[in-house]
Length: 374
Image (cartoon, rainbow, N blue to C red; front, side, top):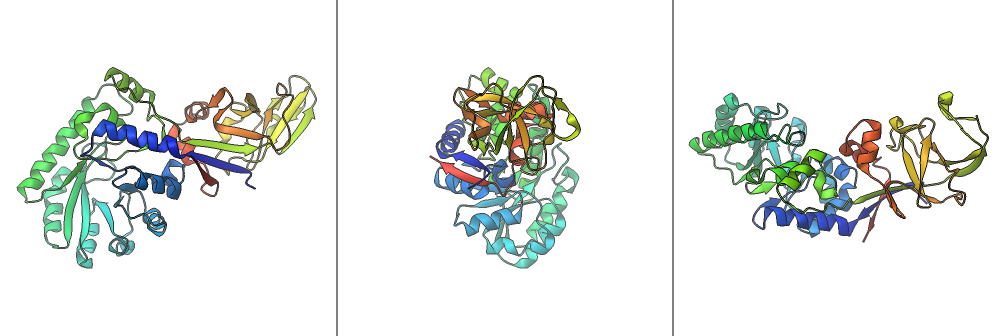
């Protein structure tokens, strides 16, 4: 039996995919990102559901993720959007993968492999991460043209601050740079079939960035990229119900009475304000329950909130259950999700720990079982 586990709602995941499909229309490629263990939700579990329920492509960051998906029997196109070491590029045609490219060294090695390979040119438009600078675009295009086995299937970029701004001036600047790059490629005789810029925030807030391919990110999992994206959706009159896909659970490992004034956990950072009871929960920061939640967070036990008390340990933490008198050993405890009428969201946990919902879910340990629920 697992000490901690993640439940994945298949119906919620399908709902979210269908909602975004309605948003983009039937003729735009829907390419959900399943990188980083599907944002913590389970690479194989989510990738399988998505491939069977409307995804046209899957996007991964690394070769090992693509290998795992292929081994699991997923046959739809997979786009590698992260860096593949030059020494591993020969694996791409074996696994029938497409890849984003932005380095001449990558282009040259892929070309010399001789096998037909679809590539997507990543254009630098202002995010200053991966990408071919405008002044290098012609040289990169000419290099691609040297190799008959390479097909420029797509061109892409990534918005820098669309999630953080209601003002979209910079995003529009990036779009203009992207379109300039498209003109340059066209003049050089390269006509990518796909153009893609939009992740979740772009799909919602910038319809003109849909083009014919979108890379759906955190929205697939029922989470908003930011509160500003929610505001943007409301301003556009979009009726979007994102359904969180993930519920994270553990169990009560011990119930014990503790006297008033007793210090709980490492460093004695919490003193019991009264005689009461605590629950020891058998997970900690090793599992992804971040240390910053010590004396801040909460868990749900028997449908009630139990405050986290003391520091988060490597493999356990404590919660005050003085107001939950019927709590028992091995009761189910919810870390993220709903129980009874109460809910703890990834956003709540993120705010308390000074981060974002993306990090909260992706930090959940990969060794933790992901269990699909209908």
